[in-house]
Length: 151
Image (cartoon, rainbow, N blue to C red; front, side, top):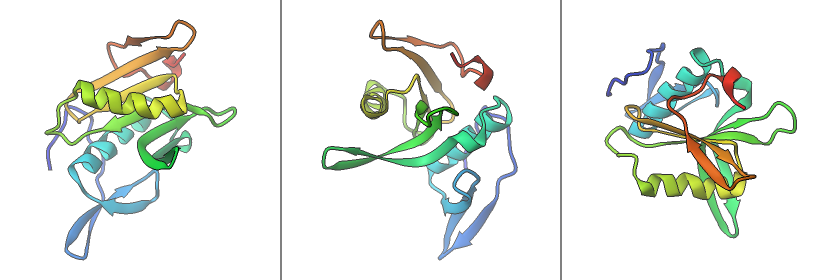
């Protein structure tokens, strides 16, 4: 698989029915290794191991219901108090550029979750913004914040 400008971590893989699976430490199980999953595992390890996000407050593949439709949010960081979403992350395969369509996708998820932060990563490019619901605005952040720096 592709390497990223993210710190390395100890990758655990196995073979299942002729396909490679990677260990997801948040779900505590092996999952199919796709290009998007490769990004997710690197990025969640970066958040936990280097930016101090509590693994106990993170969840991967969170199901959302929008009317009769079900969607799946890639990663959600929950608040310690109340358990409401504080941050959502959308991952794309390394070959997929972060476009307005991807931003619209995460904005759609956020219309249901109302998280304070939105992040997008394809492993090479990362985008983070802070939502200000009082002013109905968002501001782009220059880098992915450390957990202690989340407002």
